[in-house]
Length: 252
Image 1 (tube, helix red, strand yellow):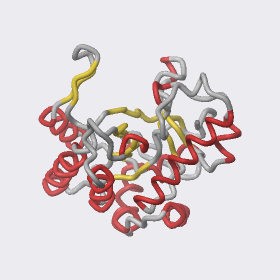
Image 2 (cartoon, rainbow, N blue to C red; image 1 turned 60 degrees about the horizontal axis):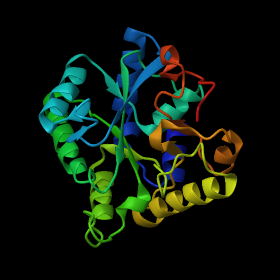
Image 3 (cartoon, one colour; image 1 turned 180 degrees about the vertical axis):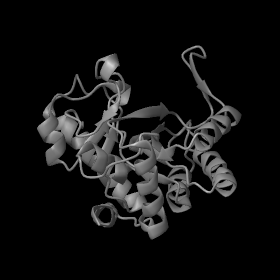
């Protein structure tokens, strides 16, 4: 019931994740594997990129094989609502749970259709629904000279991803600054603008975020006051603790 309430306030009810069959399957996985205490979170940038002299790269073919590996090995793919419940200690998840996230810019937004196609094919084969949490850089979704967003094309790609049923969404900021260098006024303006853009264009009232450059703001209370309850900051935690934890002491 808490997941359903969260979906309603978020603005999209994904009935597949509320069905008795889904709940029973999740309960059986927890019974068989045990309840997780920590979860691996992976940050992608779509499914087709080559960054930092190929030290950080991915192709659609390799992505397909990785998701297939996880499905073959019995992994559960968590939605943002399930992750929030896990982090705050009211929604247990099985040990074999993966959190897939992707930061999306105008250069990578087109990959969401390819990811949805991969998920659809593998769901048909394995009978399990893969899932990914999408973090759009909202200021980069606007049409302007020299970028990929012609007209409303970038927001349309995000709406198509939303409607596919394979994604939930959060914010990746409006202007993509280093938030360790900005004051409260810019912090508040940027994140509220980004949230409003997602509400205006996707109809979603998001409550999670992915920090640009993996740098978290120290003003946790400001983020909570704005309605953000959960966020990822890459290697912000010590490497030995760099996972999403049950009742996580650092939810943002």
